[in-house]
Image 1: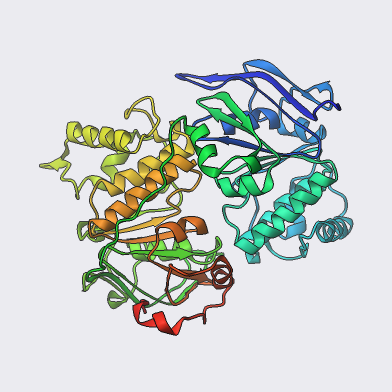
Image 2: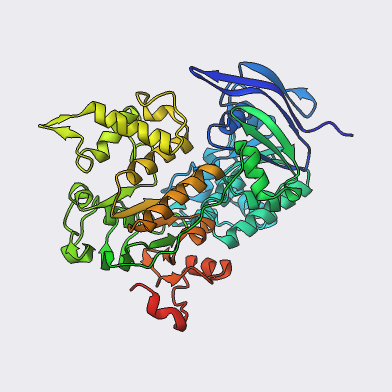
Length: 511
């Protein structure tokens, strides 16, 4: 048999207090789509960073195309035919597609020739792009095409993809999968990281599963159920979230004809947004990134104020109030950007707990923070949501992305909000942790809270939401009961087909 394209033998990487990778060994064949699975903190990110030259291993070796491979930086990895598409796009909104592609090349050709190559390669792989378009005008799916085309122009032998479908519509996911299958058929090896296990089963030829930095299993995803994959990742039986039926109560959050200009030139204007959420109800709002999600969450949280009557909490006009007065009235928010927005990177978990819970949880007395009570709440969050950390006195930036996400969501839920608005609640979180977060949201609704979940994960919204609405170009569609909605219908709504309705259920929809 031919030697695998990439061979990893005994890779080890340790940081103070934690071994991120412990003797990891696996291989990827030419033309193979190989999944890398594991819960948050399992070591996936560190592993691919070593393969791409961003991190140097402490021990172990790699071989690429039969030759020793030890890149000291990404430039060296790219020169050997290794390319990577990161989870978060690295594009400049104000520049054109061609200009962004040129920035990622070692020696870009003249712009005219580069534009021709972009057109040719993008058409050849079913990812059409206009090289003259400004990136700010592109959808999330089109932005991902820019990242992929930038990699394909390097003629990679190994393409690493980190959570590539997290911001795509179902139709865009299918286009991406067709492209990846075509690349694999041409001999390109693909190392694929995703928490969406059904996608792994549909796309990947093989899977390596990490747990706490070690390889614990390999399998063929198509022959393994999603539940079995999840159990291999966490080392225990996996239980899907369960929703207790609740009769919706009074309207706790109401938005009426909300208009809001963006706070920056590249933002999205909100136009005539109307919604209503009742006690015990979860409203799911889907949308491709850049269609007004951040602006809507800011308007609900009070970070962006509006006319008094546009936002009401239990009938009280609060559009003119900022975040703290709204929190005191029971409306709590968990924004999308966890590091820098939801949590201060250099502050400890205890200090980050105080940032949002100080007033609502009575953590201050006579003007002084009650640190023992604050620390106790932080420790309760860590225990309740299984946040993997060396201790609550450690800085937020020391946590992996998924563990910080669990901390941020847990911090808000344990404050027992009457209304909770969450943006991307399980972004970058493994299957077991995502299930735990979704269960916590559903339990909160069962206790009578009104919940708004803004997410680009359609499976998530279909699983936990009572009603679904789509945000496109700053406009919110009519909300429809989630039960009975098809993926095709949802995809059309996300694409801007807002006139969809089902007359027999119209009486149950919010404004």
